Length: 509
Image (cartoon, rainbow, N blue to C red; front, side, top):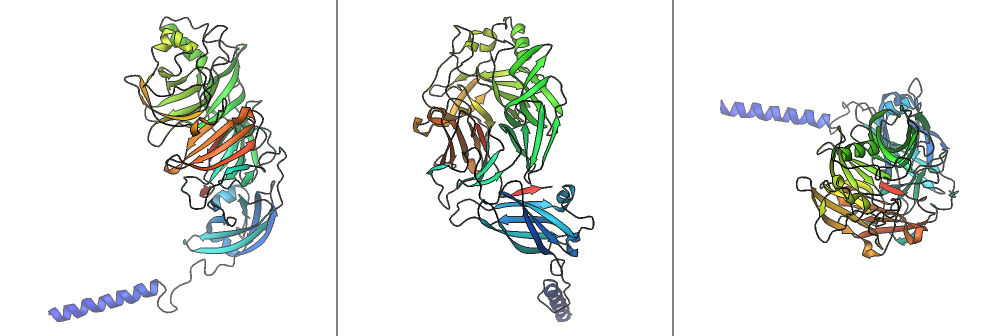
C-alpha cells in the first residue's frame, strides 16, 4: 500500500512538472503565443514638437487595439551621470489627449526630454492586455536649441557630477520669469522647455504637467509635457494676479495672490488653495487673520498690518499634515504657523530684533531658538523634510519695508539652508543642521532648497554675486556637493526657485 501510494505521488509530480514546463514555454509547441508574439505593431513616422526637446512618434498595426500602456526611455549621452528620461503613458491617457485613432490601430506617442541638436536613441515598450511586452527602437534627430534669453544653454559648470555619485534626483526644473519652466539634468543639459509662455515663476509640477499662475492676471495655465497649453480663470473675483510660489496643499495647490477687496489693495498678504483648474478651495487673508488675533490680545494692529503696502510679503506656504496646519513664510517678518481650518495662530518664528517682536501679542507666540542657531531671516521655500524638520532657505537679508524708524532686524553676509526641530508645546526651536557652503554665497532674495530621495538636496541660489549669477547646487545625503552650475541672471529671473523632478520615472494617465 505504501509503495503504491509513493508511486502515485511520484507520477502526479511528474505530470505537474510536465504541465509547468509546457506552461513556461519549456515544452512543445502547444504553448499559445502571447499578444506581443503575434503583434504587427510597427514604427511609423516621427515629427518635431514646439521645441527640440519634444517629439512625436507614430505607430500602426491592428495589435495596438490591445495595448494597455506605452513606455519610452531615452538613451543618455555617452558619459552622462544622469538616469535616462523615461515615462509611461496609459493608453487611456493617450486616448484622452487625442493620440489614439477611433479604431485603435494607430497611436501617436509624445516623447519629451530629448537632447537638442542630437540623434536620440529611444526604446519604446508596448505593454499588452495580457502583460506581454513588445520592444521597438526609434531614432529622433533634433534641431539645435539656442535660448532666446541667452541663459539656459550656456551654464558654467563649476563642479560636474561624476558618474556613479549618489544623488536622490537626476533632473530639476527652474522656475523662470523669462518664459517656460526649464528642465535640466544633473549633467547640465537642458531636457525640456515649452513655448508660448511669458513668465513661469509661479509654477508647480503635478500629474505629468506644469501648473502656472499668471503674474499679471487671475489666470492659471496647465502646460503638458507635449507642449499643449490650457488655461482657466480663478473662481474668485477678488484676486488680481499670482506672485511667488505654488506649493502642494491639503487638497490642491497653495498659491500666493494679490487681491482687491472693497477698494483696498492687499499686496502679497493672501494665500489661497486652488485646484489646477482654478477653483478656489480655501483662503487665508493674513491681514485679516493677524488683525483679528492682535485685537483679541489687546494690541492695536494698525501700525503693523498696513493694507496697500507690502508689509507682509508672503513667498511660500507649506501644508503640515501632522497637525492639519499651514506654515507661511513672510519675508518681511517671520515664519508663521496657522491652524488650517480656523486660521488661529499656533506659533511664530523669526528674528526677535525685528519690528514684529515689539507687539506683545505676536511676541507671545514666538518660538525661542536654542543658542547657536540661526533665526530665519528673509527666508524662502519652507518645507517639511522626510524626518519631520522645518527646512527653509535662510537668505539673511533684513526687512526692507517697515515703517520709518522701526527696527529692521539683522542682516548676514552669507545665506544658508536651515533645518529646525520645533516643539510647539514649549514654543522652542533647535536648528538641527545647516548648510552654508563655507559662508561663500550670499543670495539675499528669492532662492530655494528642497529635499529629494535619500535626503539629497537641490539648492537654488537665485541671486549670487550681487544678483548677477544663479547657482544650482546638488547635495548628497551627507550634504556633500555633487554638482554646481552657474547661469547669468538679472535679479531673480533665471531661477527664482528650483525643484527636483522625476523625469526618469513618470506615469501619465
